[in-house]
Image (cartoon, rainbow, N blue to C red; front, side, top):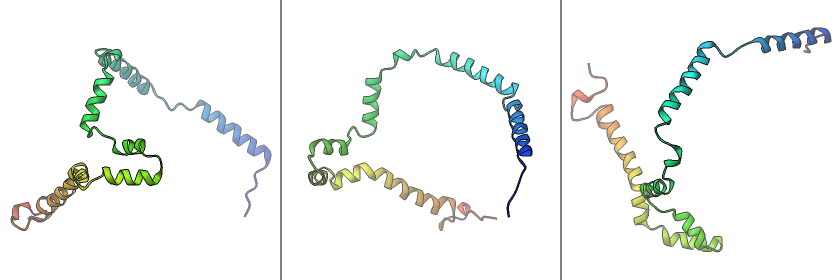
Length: 135
């Protein structure tokens, strides 16, 4: 099954499409007004804090302290000369205690989510007032 369009009709179709697209406006006056208000608001809100006053070094140390203050993979990579040595050094650095301290809060959050779903959201076996299909 072939679809055949004569060249003149195809040319007319392409020109009509281009004219329609060039005259179409996807931006309305309301969009322009919203853009002007956003620029005005950002000038008002952001002028209170000069950009040069940001203490990048102090904020970086705060961020590193909040995330655990160590990049164990980078440290092990810097100490290692090859992949075999990297594996051995990583095995020495990553202890069960380190894994529990690092991943423990995330694992506990999943356990807490399961407890919440079981006890509070679905059907608590101890209390009728917590049941989801309570009449």
